[in-house]
Image (tube, rainbow, N blue to C red; front, side, top):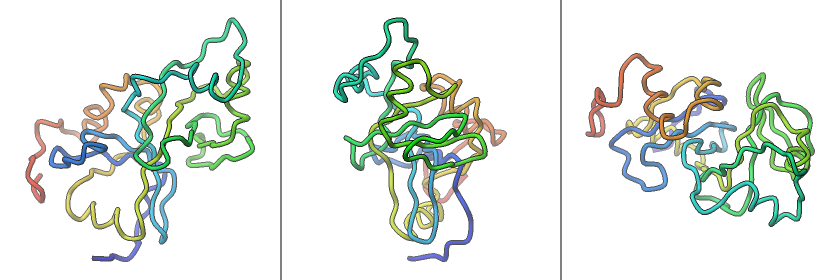
Length: 190
């Protein structure tokens, strides 16, 4: 069922309902970076990759960090599409070679220059590094919302940048005034 695009999900979180059983998205919090008539794109922001660190990414890209650098060490599973492609969610937005301003204070950059700056401690104040992304074709995210697979939640910066990864799903739900235990595991019920 293809529904008319009538609302904007950009700069919002999609929070997986307990009924969503897709292993890529169970208890996922997805930061939506683009949404329009052609579809939607987002990055999962609560799934650390256990076998990959930022040092590994920099080494693979032949970027040598300065010795006293305090880089975020965690790399996130951004989604199941193009898992070899990297993205940096950051604030402030700043101008890098390939940056999409998502919110007034948050950008998503996919160019190498931001990693080079981060390696020299000249990067953005806050940054999350993710490999891969989540994408939905035209009308698919609207259908999934109608089927009650996702909650739409404001993308609070404290959750995006400051909350421990393992607490993001529950904390995002709690911003709506209830907890995960109040949600039904059955599709179509609250």
